[in-house]
Amino acid sequence: MSDLNVPPQCHLCTTTNCYRKNASFPSICITAAGIVELDSVRERYRTDVEANRVLRVAAQTEARAYGKMTRVEETIEFAREMGYRKIGIASCVGLAREANLFGRMLSRNGFDVCGVICKVGAIDKTELGIPEEHKLKPGCFEAACNPLLQAELLNREKTDFNVMIGLCVGHDSLFIKHSNAPVTVLIAKDRVLVHNPAAALYASGFYYQHLMQVEPNKISPEPLDC
Image (cartoon, rainbow, N blue to C red):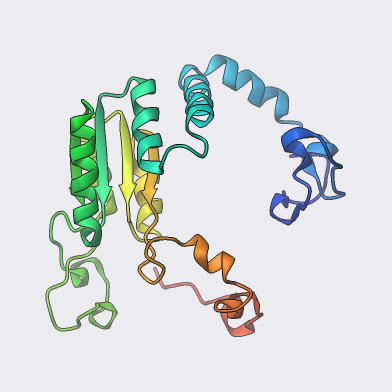
């Protein structure tokens, strides 16, 4: 913890002076207050071989790609520079075509590719405790998303690096938590905004201004029963 007796609140900062130190630190700044973990983190970057290499290669990729390469190109460049050979793709069934295209690109660039779609195993939602009314089409067979099995199958293949394409919110969390290999996101699914979730932030002053309004009945929803 820092010397500030408050949680980190970098999302409220308007100066980002920690980046280039060309402005002033705000009163809420945890960097200015002193972060006691800083020295131990520096040491971890020196002693953790994987963390050090990922940090350096990511910076190298950023320097080459910034404003020049797409996310797809950056992902391929990063994987190549890291020396990864086997790439796993964990994809949403709704983005099967995108997964196919990206997999073909990886193969053409010399990588071994393993892909696992979210509906793998074809387990009906009701078998996992999801009520019928929570299906998109109640009364029909509807497979549950299966991020745990996606992670297990890619772990079994000993992939070097896993790429998520469109996994649902929550399902992506489970996949990341249980993946043995490092994970990156190629596509964050947003069907309404054509997989560009940042658009809701940019349009928060008009189309999505309701997201900035306080709705007391939505602040603390009751947790689901276990």
